[in-house]
Image 1 (cartoon, rainbow, N blue to C red):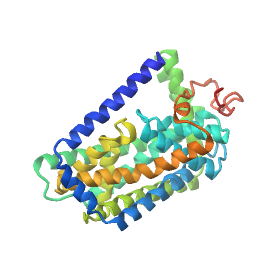
Image 2 (image 1 turned 90 degrees about the horizontal axis):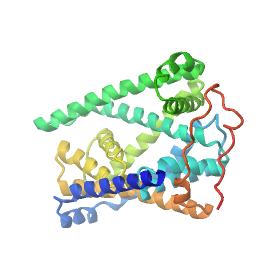
Image 3 (image 1 turned 45 degrees about the horizontal axis):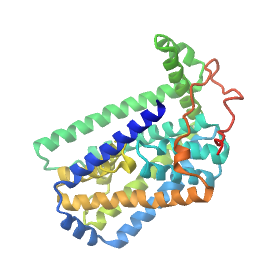
Image 4 (image 1 turned 60 degrees about the vertical axis):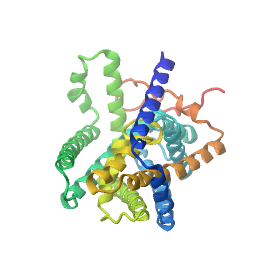
Length: 363
C-alpha cells in the first residue's frame, strides 16, 4: 500500500508538470523566446546567479541552524550539504521530495534526532510564508500596478485581500504556538480536549506534530532569538528579490525594486504545486504576473520565467549532486526514509528514545 500511494503521488506530480508545461508553452513563439534569451544581458545574469548562490545554501542554512538549536549544533558544512541535497531532490524528484530529503540528510550526517529536523522544516516554511506575505503587503500598499483592466484589477484585489487574511491568520497562529511553547503543559488543557473526539491514531499524530512545532519554537526562546531569525528571513528574501530584479534587468524589464515582491508572490504560488522543481507551475505563474499585470509581451515573460527558474534551481542542484557524490548517498535512499511517527504524548519533553539520532538503514 505505501508503494502504491507513492506511485500515485509521483504520477500526479508528473501529470501536473506536463499539463502546466503544455498550458505555458502552447501559445508561445519559440523563435521569439529564443531571441529574447539570446539577447539577455549576461553581466546581470551573472550577478543574479551569485545572489542565488549566497542565499542558498549559505544564508538559508545558517537560519536553519538557528531553528535547530535545541536539537543540536550541526556544523555549517553539514547544514549547507543537507540544504543543497534537499534542493536537488526538490528539482529532480516529484511530490516535493526535498522536504523529506533535507531533514533526513542532516539527521544522518549530524547524528540529530529526526523528528525535530522535520519540525524545523515546517517552521521554516511558516516563517517564509509570513515574510513573503509581509513583502507583498508592502508592495501592494505603495507600488500596485496602474492601468489594469477589470479582470486583472479584480484578481489583484482578491490576491491582496487573501494576503491580508492569510498573513493575519498566520501571525495569530504563530502567536498561539508561541503561547503554548512558553508552557507546553498548556497543550493538555487547551488542545487535547479538541483532539479527544478524533480517532486515536489521528489525534496522536496531530499532538505529535504540535509538540514538534513547539520544540522548534522553543529554539526561539528569547526576544533576541526571534529578532535574529526575523532579520535573517527578511535579508534572505531581500536577496532573493535582488536576484529576481537582476534577472528582470537582464531582459530590459526596468521595474521598481518592490515589483519583485509581486513576482515572488506568484512564484511561491506556482511552486506550491507539487511538481519536480516547480516545473510548469513556476513558469506559468511568473509569466502571468508580468503579462497580466504589467503588459510584458508573453514571449519576453516566458523567456524571463525560463531563465529565472534555471538560475534558481540549476546551480543549487549541481551543488547538491556534488555533496551527494562526496557523501556516497543517493536521493532515493534519503527520500525513502519514513517520516517520524507519533511520539508518546504523556510529556512534552523528549524521552531518551526520542533523542536517538536517525540511523542509516542497512545496505
